[in-house]
Length: 100
Image (tube, rainbow, N blue to C red; front, side, top):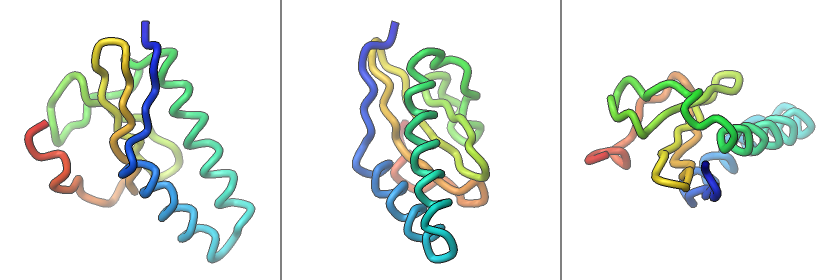
C-alpha cells in the first residue's frame, strides 16, 4: 500500500504555470483546475496502477492520469508515489524524463 505522495518541484511549477495561464481568462476556473489536480494526486494514492503507462516512456512504473487536457505523470516506487509533471496533452515530454 502506498503511504507517501510527493509532488516534485517541477510538477508544482507546472501547476503554477497552468494556473497563471488559465487565470488570464478566469481566476475562478484556474482555482478549480488547481484544486482538481491536487485531488487527482490524492486519488492516485488509492489506486496507483489505475493510470496508464506513459506511452513515450514504456516504463510500467511511470504512469499518467488525465484531467481535462492535462497529463499528470507519476512514478510508483515501493510505498511512494512521486508526481513528476503536469503537462498539457499536446506538449511533448521534455528531457527531464531521459533515462527513466
